[in-house]
Structures are given as structure tokens and as C-alpha cells.
Amino acid sequence: MPSRNVDLPVVRLELDPENPRLDRTLSQSEILVHFAEDPKFRKLAADIASSGLNPLESRLVVPVKGKSLLYRVMEGNRRVAAVKLLFEPELAGQERYVTIFKRLSAESKIPLPSTIPCVLLDNDEEAFHWMRVRHGGEQGGTGIQPWGPQEVERFNRRIGKRGQNSLAHALLEYAKTKKIVDETVAAAVPITSLTRLVNDKTVRAELGMRVDDEALATQLKVGNLNRVIKNVLTALASGATKVDQIYSQESRTKYIRQVLRDEGISEDRFGRSSIRLDAGAAAASLGSISSNRTLQRTKRRSIDRKTLVPRDFQLAIPHPRANAIYHELKALPVNDFTNAAAVLTRVFLEVSVEHLLNREKLKFHAFNDSP
Image (tube, rainbow, N blue to C red; front, top):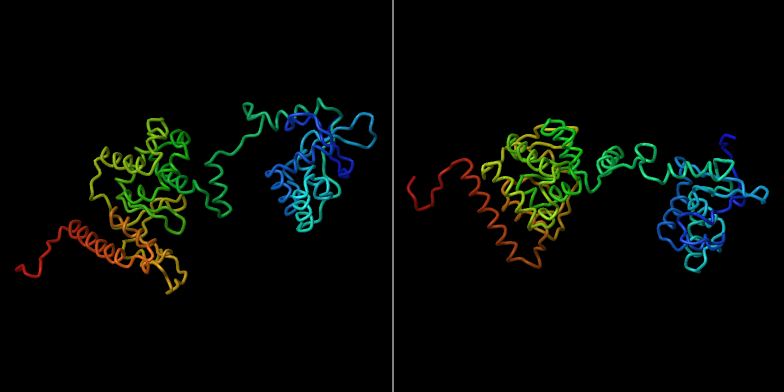
């Protein structure tokens, strides 16, 4: 007989004592206590109390032999158990768990379901096939195909959420859009390793990068930028760059400086305009440094601040040492370290002026020099 969609009362559903999640056969009450002790199960119960049962997942049930109108849950035991405990918190065992489920039930944002949508099958064997599909891995395409880090990041962008790999994902999308690397290389890049690099402030300073309105931008000249990206992505994809080479901040700094040397990129590697690296505006010029004021957030800053540079102030500084000092001044409490802040400010100005003179090939005249 084909499967049938049915709504079954919670009290008619019996949990599977041979559930592979259990390391031994348990009674119905013992199964509930076992689940209640699991923090992840309690998070599931909280989500059900807040949003209801996941409509993307079916509960597979079969008739219980010798017990009229009872059905054993073959797939979806945790979800059914959560509903049972939300209805009867006293079954959670220890008092602290009983209290938790009472609170979840009382604070439920939706009516708790007294009936649960299920798919009714004739026997265990029919259920086993679908359980293997659900829990047996990808199985060459038959089973569940889980999202990888890049798919997760694309979804996060769709819903306006920034994940920990978002900057790395933006860099990959830029590389593919500009055909710096092909799809095969991009797919082979371990996203967590790339994240280690682009999330490192020192690495970003070496590359003139900044996070601007949650997007990645850089002041590297386009030619320099593309060569660095190709070098880094190709090495990561091929396995030539190992995790231990970029594991610590010190090793990451050493690594990116070596990449710059290998590509023959000198101190004069920064341009006057910024390049935005998000997929929606790949390589779009953001104007000169002096015009980047329009990129800053318009949130009003409090005049009652504890640091010389407001923490929410954003500025693109291509010079690595000046950039490092700038970030220290954003974190250093002025009232506690007045002299240190003053010295850092002076060094910042000296380094900045010296960099400008060198970049523009200007000659400096001291006051006692003749013009």
C-alpha cells in the first residue's frame, strides 16, 4: 500500500525503542528522560515552541503490531519527543529539566500541536529505505546533499546576515567574476583557510584592505590585487599552502609578505582609489581616498568617547604601520594611557607624512634650509 499523509494525535504516537540514536533499548519514559538531558534536544524543543514543527521534514510512522490505534515513530523521534515534553514537562525526569520544559511550554509563541502531520507506511522495511536516504550520507546523490561553507554564505547574504566566512566568500566571488581563477580552482579552495587570511587585520593591512559597510575593499592597484589573489587562491586550492603556514597571526603575516615578494610587489603597491570586492560591485571604483568620506556610516557618534579615534570610525589606510597605529588608537583608552596615546599620535603623523612625501616624490625642507 502506498504511503499516506495523516494527522495523528500526539498521544497515539510511540517513540522507537530501537532508534539508532539510543545506545540501548529504553522504555517510552526512559527515552523522554534521555532526550531531555541533551542540550541540543532542548534547543530543538525551544525552536518548536517558538516556530512550530519544521514543514520541510516528515515524521514516518508505522502501525504498532498488537496495539490498535498506536503508531511507532520511525523517523522524527526527537521532534515528536519534544512535543510530548512540551505537553507534559513532568516526564522530563530531573526537576531542572522539568522546570525548563514548563517554561518553554508557558512561553510558547504558537499553540502547541495536539496532532502531528505524519507519513503512514505499512511496515518497518518501507521506512528503512527512507531512513537510509535521510541519514546515510550523500550516497552518490540519492541522499541529502548538505550545504558547504560557500552555499551557507550565499544563503546568509540572501537573508542579509553576515557569517564568519563572508569576507572570504566575497573574495572568491570577485576572483570568479573577474576570471582571475576558474570555477574548478575556486571550488577547491578551503574556505576556512581563506577566512583565516582575510579575517586577519594584519594581512588586510598588508593588502590595503578594509571592511567597509560589511563589504571588503582594497587600495591595492588592480594589477597587484589580481596577482596576489591568483597566487593565494591557486596555492590554497592545490594544497601548496598548508594550514600550519597560516595558522597563527605571525605565520599569516610572514606568508602574505612572502606572497608580495614572490609577485615582485613593492611598497608602492597602493593606488588612490579603492576597489570593492563584493560580488555585486566587483572592481567598482569607490573614488579617491579623500572622497571616501561618503562611505562612512552616518550613525551619530557620541562625543563622550574613551579613545582618541572613535571605535565606529572607518578609514582606509594603505600604509601597514600607519594602519596598525590607527587601530591601536581606536582601542587605547586615552584617560588611562595619555602619554602613550600622545606618542602614538605623533608617530602616526610622522609616518603618514613621510609616506606621502615618498609616494609623491616631494622634497622636504627643514625650517633652517634654504629653498
